[in-house]
Every structure is written in structure tokens, then in C-alpha cells.
Image (cartoon, rainbow, N blue to C red; front, side):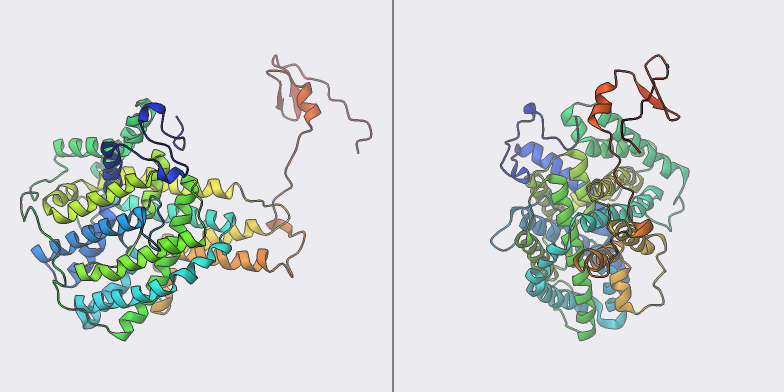
Length: 497
């Protein structure tokens, strides 16, 4: 069964006019929702771990920061998927702490402002982002398939190093980082996903990622590669304490730098909305994008109250939607509920945190590769004849991959420039939009026959030729052979030249 086909009749889902509105049984929705949580869990807890450690937090305070990010991520996901008037794209998008803000937040922390300055900068910049979101959404007109395909492809390719890092062990300082045991565990998880996808029933195939993570974790525990000793340490229930680290402060420099980050987040979320629309077949216009961006910014503005950071859509979960073929936003909303529960029940969060990173790495390779494949599928629909679309795609993807393959490439550039272009997604999006305007919107000066940058004309075979062929006929070395290998005579058409 194809991944992108609708669930089988025995799946008991209620089909809707919009694919993203498909209803699922509660149990099924939460199963898929939990799979979404597992997919992005490592990404959502990494920013608070990094920033909290830089701020000198330890023990319960660091755990509270992680719990807060899970809780607010769940709230943001519910707002994005279910939506209220003016807020929420109503698409299957999981929200969580944005990685795009980590470098800037570290600079604010190290600048002496501490976490209060971080929270104040995030809050102020998010309010500004909330104001500009509707205007930002108008760039939908500058995102034709040649642009969206580039951005979606770059999203997938830029996430592959994340999966590789997970596969190596996640912690570069650990003694077993990059060991054959870690890589073997990643490979085993990947094989389990393939086997379940190939041999499992429809339901098992759709849950192959989740089941492979569970099976991989059990095997890792048997081999002594999973540590559940810390699960019992700490409170079972804890509600995020508002302004636990003090009331926010609002340093001007921190706010300005965070506004740049917010623009990057708006760009990435726009790309994610377009990507999930491509995967699900949902219809997206500038109004719906604006609703999604407003949900992002409202969540980010409220997040510091509960000790959280900027929120954005998670690109890896777009890959999960593509892999499973489950397009229902209610499955992702259930995932938001799971995130909130994890945020209120730290003991469950500690269980999920015990999943070995190499197991997540095996799943990540499939998921992130699927995002890239979705982008390639979009690019296959682009017309490359007698235009400059080929150079737009080539340059934009290459430009987007520069910070991915060479993270220090922009080390000598101003900090504001690094904030924008250290993101491969933002780099590719900006380049693709600009080149599309230069070559396709502003037609003046673009040559009609653009030399090597235009694709060769599409080759076509006349229908009369096909009518002459029989079963087993084939072409080898310029000769047409029948099923027995005998050469067929080729007659030149009258008047051909």
C-alpha cells in the first residue's frame, strides 16, 4: 500500500472534505500522536538543555526548564492544529522550541542578562512577529513550486546531520560517541522499520516508526545500552511555575537580535506549512499561512511566562506525515496532548528521555530523507524548458547546504548575518525567492535561449510508433529488437529530414 494513499476501509477513519480533517478513533489518534512526540522529543528538549546549562542551571531547575518546553509545545501544537479565529493553520504541524533561536539566546545569556533577559527578549520579539505575521504571509505569491521544492528538499537535507548525530550517540563528549555499537543500534532500528513497512499489515506499517523505536529500545536495554535508572528520581507531577526564574527584563540589543531570529522562524514555518500542504494535499493560501504564523508568534509570546522559548513548526514531523500517510490534524493534536501530559508528569518525560539516541537516529534517517524526497517530487513538476528554473534550483540548494556541510563558513560575518544564514533552510528560501523574482517575475533581460542553464527539450515518441510495438519489443544500442532478440527493420518516414 502506498504511503500517501488514504487509510484502508478497515482503518475506521472518517473521511472529510479536506484530507487534514479526517477523523480517527481516539486510541488510533493517540498512537500516531505519540509517534510524533517520539520523533521530535530529542529536538524539543535539546534547546532547554543547552540554554539551561549555559545559564548554570542544575538538577530540579534544569528539569523544570525542560518540562516547561514540553508543556508549552503541547499548548502551541493544540493551537496550531485545532485553531481558533485568526490563530492556527489547522494543519498536522507539531510545534516545539525552535532551534533557530539557540545561538542568539546563548549570546544573551552569556552577555550577563541571564534567563530573565532571554525571556523578555523572546516575549518582545514575538509580539513584533505577531504584528508582522499577516504581511509576511503575503510572500505566498513568491513561493511557486520551483521555490517550495527547493525549500522542502533543503529542509530534509539539512536535517540529515541531526539524524547522524543521534546515530552516533547524541553526546559528542560521551566515551562511546561514534562507536560501532551505536551505529549498529541505529542500523538495527532502520532495518526493523523496513521489515515492518514491508511485511506488516496496514496498521503495523503506519506505526512502523513507533514500533521500531520501542523494539530498538528494548533490544538496547537488553544489551545494556539504555539507562532507565533516573526514571524514579524526581517528582511525578509538576506544573510549570510561571516566572520561576524571575520577571523578564527587556534589553534592547537582545530584542533586536531576537527580531531577526523571529523573521527566520517565520520563514521556516512558512516553508513547513507549504511542505505539509504538499504532503497532505491540503489547500493553502496567504490567509491560512497568516493564521499559522500568528499561532507561532502567540505561542512564542506566551511561552516565557511558563519559562519557555520561541515556538515553531518541526520539520521532521512533516516527514512522519509523509511516511505514515496519516494526514489528520487530529492525530497531531493528540500528540500535543501527549506533550502537555509529559510536561505535567516529568516521570513520563524521564521514561521517554531514556530512549537511546541511536534508536532515534535510525528513525530520523527515514523521516528526514522523506522530507527531501517530498521536495524532489515537487521539483519534478517544475517546467525547466526555455527558462532559468534549473539555475534557480541548483544555486538555491547549493547555497542552502553551505552552512550544513560547513558550519563555520560564516564565522567571520556579523552576528546578525550569521543568525539568518547559519540556517540552511532560511538560506535556501531567501536565495530561491530572490532568484525566482530576478528570473521569472522580472522578465526583462532574461534570454529566451539561456544556454546550458535550460533543460533539454522534452523527448516525445509519436503514438504511431507505439502502435507498431508488441509485447517484449525493446531498444538496445540504437536498434529495435523483438522479444526473441531479432532486429526489427526501421523505415524512415516520408518527408523526414
